[in-house]
Amino acid sequence: MIDINNHLAYLDGDSWKMVAGDFKDVAVGNEFVWALKPNGDIYRTRDVWSVGWERVEGNKKQIDSTDEGFVWGLSSSGSM
Image (cartoon, rainbow, N blue to C red; front, side, top):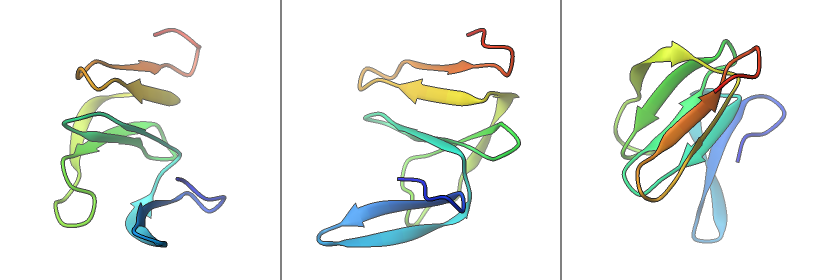
Protein backbone atom coordinates (compact mmCIF):
# COMPACT_ATOMS: atom_id res chain seq x y z
CA MET A 1 0.00 0.00 0.00
CA ILE A 2 1.16 3.55 -0.70
CA ASP A 3 -0.28 6.30 1.50
CA ILE A 4 -1.01 9.93 0.55
CA ASN A 5 2.54 10.90 1.57
CA ASN A 6 4.13 8.43 -0.93
CA HIS A 7 5.17 6.01 1.85
CA LEU A 8 5.09 2.30 1.08
CA ALA A 9 3.77 -0.07 3.75
CA TYR A 10 3.17 -3.81 3.94
CA LEU A 11 1.02 -5.89 6.26
CA ASP A 12 3.05 -7.98 8.71
CA GLY A 13 0.63 -10.15 10.66
CA ASP A 14 -1.87 -7.67 12.06
CA SER A 15 0.19 -4.45 11.79
CA TRP A 16 1.46 -2.26 8.97
CA LYS A 17 5.23 -1.78 8.55
CA MET A 18 6.64 1.24 6.71
CA VAL A 19 9.33 0.90 4.05
CA ALA A 20 11.96 3.66 3.79
CA GLY A 21 11.66 5.91 0.75
CA ASP A 22 9.02 7.75 -1.26
CA PHE A 23 7.02 5.81 -3.86
CA LYS A 24 4.04 6.53 -6.12
CA ASP A 25 3.21 3.03 -7.41
CA VAL A 26 4.02 -0.57 -6.48
CA ALA A 27 3.55 -3.97 -8.12
CA VAL A 28 4.27 -7.37 -6.61
CA GLY A 29 5.27 -10.55 -8.44
CA ASN A 30 6.66 -13.89 -7.26
CA GLU A 31 10.30 -12.82 -7.61
CA PHE A 32 10.37 -9.02 -7.19
CA VAL A 33 8.54 -6.08 -5.71
CA TRP A 34 8.58 -3.27 -8.28
CA ALA A 35 8.13 0.36 -7.30
CA LEU A 36 8.12 3.79 -8.89
CA LYS A 37 9.52 6.89 -7.26
CA PRO A 38 7.46 10.10 -7.55
CA ASN A 39 9.68 11.18 -10.50
CA GLY A 40 8.94 7.88 -12.33
CA ASP A 41 12.26 6.13 -11.71
CA ILE A 42 11.84 2.34 -11.52
CA TYR A 43 13.20 0.21 -8.66
CA ARG A 44 12.94 -3.44 -7.68
CA THR A 45 13.81 -5.61 -4.69
CA ARG A 46 13.37 -9.20 -3.59
CA ASP A 47 12.84 -8.27 0.06
CA VAL A 48 11.33 -4.89 1.06
CA TRP A 49 12.33 -5.13 4.72
CA SER A 50 16.01 -6.09 4.58
CA VAL A 51 17.49 -5.72 1.09
CA GLY A 52 18.10 -2.45 -0.74
CA TRP A 53 16.29 -1.32 -3.85
CA GLU A 54 17.96 -1.78 -7.25
CA ARG A 55 17.47 0.99 -9.84
CA VAL A 56 16.16 -0.32 -13.18
CA GLU A 57 16.58 1.62 -16.40
CA GLY A 58 13.50 3.54 -17.49
CA ASN A 59 10.89 5.98 -16.31
CA LYS A 60 7.15 5.25 -15.99
CA LYS A 61 4.02 6.74 -14.46
CA GLN A 62 2.44 3.36 -13.65
CA ILE A 63 3.78 -0.19 -13.29
CA ASP A 64 2.32 -3.70 -12.98
CA SER A 65 3.67 -7.24 -12.77
CA THR A 66 2.47 -10.84 -12.84
CA ASP A 67 3.34 -13.93 -10.84
CA GLU A 68 4.98 -15.29 -14.01
CA GLY A 69 7.59 -12.50 -13.93
CA PHE A 70 6.20 -10.22 -16.62
CA VAL A 71 6.46 -6.50 -15.88
CA TRP A 72 5.06 -3.63 -17.85
CA GLY A 73 4.58 0.06 -17.36
CA LEU A 74 2.89 3.10 -18.78
CA SER A 75 4.93 6.10 -19.89
CA SER A 76 3.87 9.66 -19.11
CA SER A 77 2.31 9.80 -22.61
CA GLY A 78 0.25 6.67 -21.91
CA SER A 79 2.20 4.21 -24.08
CA MET A 80 3.49 0.86 -22.83
